[in-house]
Length: 303
Ligand code: SF4
Image 1 (tube, helix red, strand yellow):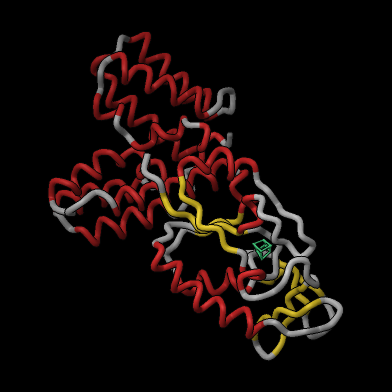
Image 2 (cartoon, rainbow, N blue to C red):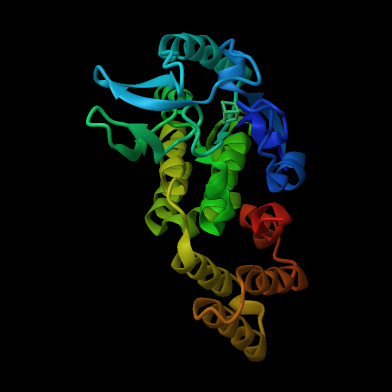
């Protein structure tokens, strides 16, 4: 599997950069996802020039924008943070990051539902960290997720599919008719799981040799999680592919695997493993080289 450059809030990797000198190490990220990515750690608060330890800060609504203000001294750090963001984001662009994982709840890094003090002295959860906001504006198509969200199977699979597929796309070489069809052939089941329409469109544009259309289609398709129905749709297609060589008993076993998964009596890995078992048994090279096979790896399973 290719290594993707992924930006990350530095405290999630165990760096002691939080306001009180602590960290927020996420073991899954460092130990399980770590071997597949080249981390680009970023701590907006320390990199914009604030010391550690430092006074904690929160978001305040004011003058039509969210402001970053220290809790007891009331110092407004918005300008210091946003001007640093502009410089750092350009550097991240040069570094070629293919995704970003942010620490939730932070007035700098939090992506959503960050505490926001309003002018009416109320506090709501409609805030977004200043760095997170700048990141989204600068890289509108970049896969960005909060670390907490990656605990959810669908969110994790969706984020990983996006960053790994983008990297395979970036490194596939000259995009011509042959490579596009090859790209489609390897990704067709993954894309089908996310979107039936997306898979049909990708097949069409790959055969037509339309590079940008292909890219737009898979980016769009992978941006929505598969969900259980998507997984079942994909396994149904695998069953069709295998059926000509399966015995009646084997076909029945695979049908049963789909329905047991659908009804929650078996997990995704157990069901999918059975399909790849038969793909190997009958030397179905097309199935064995499908990118959705990566879903059986611990990084997709959540460690
Ligand atoms: S949440 Fe962001 S700003 Fe806060 S310590 Fe972690 S990396 Fe630094």
